[in-house]
Image (tube, rainbow, N blue to C red):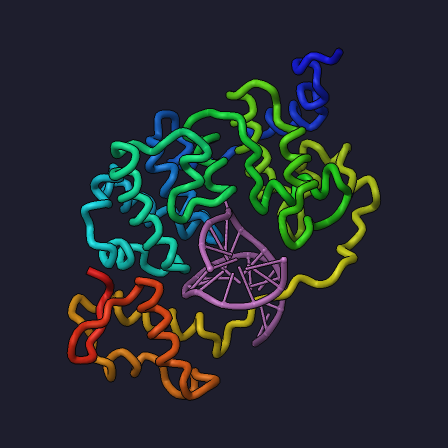
Length: 304
DNA sequence: AAGCCGTGGGC
DNA sequence: TGCCCAAGGCT
């Protein structure tokens, strides 16, 4: 009989050095301050999806002052939130966060739920963000599997330079098995591994000389073999719908008044298009997504 | 379940 | 200079 207390994770050799490193070297980010409200942490997690800390910081500070509670944001028209999102990218995140605020008000009495399943059911909150909020805001024990954590485990445990293209069951199992037993320690572990991936075990040019676990890193011990599998497929950009949509949204964000169709499409010169119907398709898509509101007379604005 | 969805900075 | 990448989610 092996009691849970003596499971391998409880004494895993990665724990102590990574936790000690985090205590010494973690960044002083405002959403990590003790007592930071769950709602503010939730906002940070949404903003940080695919967006670097340096670009999130100033917007996050504005937002927590402007909308300190979910109710404050919920009573705002979605267009205001989309405009305040600015150039953070992927504006659907802003729209979903607004919907998330309304769901928190309508279904949870205005308080961010601490339950993982309830978090997961909210708009814009997926597997990662639900675990992150439950862990960072509520001190619970969850496998927090983001791109940083996946890379750290790929290298230190699996011995590969990069994790698989998509999260695998094996990765989820590994992250779960490596969780320290105690809730508070597991939560600290989660943020510590993320921080190690963000600062030391980076995608390119990892700083192994500064790494607290370089001596036990499977990838390093194997001679740091370069990634062997198929190259990661980079996302195209020039001439894509995303570029067109971005230009249209930028125009709408920049105007307090509705824009006429000519005023809107002049933002996208023909030279930027790869097909004739692309502009109208993108505009229709934005309307379908709820990011743009069409008005009578062929005018458009951010959703009121 | 592979592809789509913005933006800007670092090397 | 381009290319790669950044605390993903949704369909």
